[in-house]
Image (cartoon, rainbow over all chains, first blue to last red; front, side, top):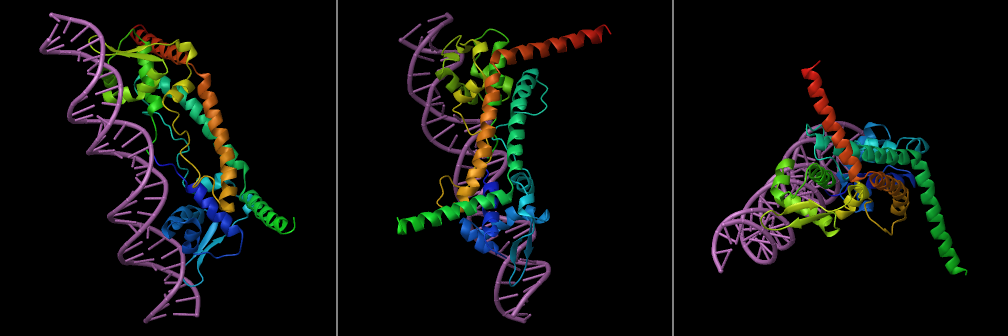
Length: 152
Length: 152
DNA sequence: GTTTCATGTAACTTTATATGTTACATGATG
DNA sequence: CATCATGTAACATATAAAGTTACATGAAAC
């Protein structure tokens, strides 16, 4: 399977939006991410349904942040995407009649469950505000380096 | 991407083999797993290279276990498959120039890394012998239930 | 030694899923 | 009413697993 980069993508969009006031058209956002406007609308649809962002049609329309970034975690964003599969691996068959398969599944399921739970927990620890702050730090660091270069 | 069931599949094969002396032809194993002999050979190739199983050509040939099941973990088997991707999600781009992307990646990488490490650790805790013992327990329980049904 | 059996492997097909694209309907603004 | 922007369906492309076919290689049986 191709690996899923929707979470990565939608976070990229949200962080861009958090850097300056909107609204932003799908086309603008698509250019910043080097992709297609429809892809933007697609990954943003779930966030709109949950009220994290708003979208307006017509002149001056586009996407706007509509939530407190310090109250939305990466896990919330993940859920807004529809909670796609986290692990690349899966059991051959779920609920098999074969006892061999049952024994294998029991062992793997335990490991899979733990890993998924940890991943979700980690995503739940990071808010969009924390990400945005980190980004500002990185932007500041770059500016500082530029200044240092001019005045060594 | 389609989700990867090779680990599940190869464990199924190994457990079948542990239940009775071999050798087993790819065709026999394929029938037990409702798949194709070539698929069996494919997923077994890595295990053969690492010496976990042996394969013989010609009459009376086939696959044989060639390791101490109590010393091979599910993690070892996973590595024998070539260590395929564990997570279904990934960053849009690795090592991006864009600072936004860097901030997103930094946050996700941390979560991804922790989840992968835990999954590998869990797989490393389970040996093939443990799986095989569990299977025997299940087989015993079924037999016991059958007897109970006859003599309630 | 020839036949039969089994693996080894390349090449191709199929399937599932994410991503990219086109087309057009819907609604808001000027 | 013309323009802009989203909403969405439909279709195309890309990637990777799984399934299939074909054939070469080597071992055992006869």
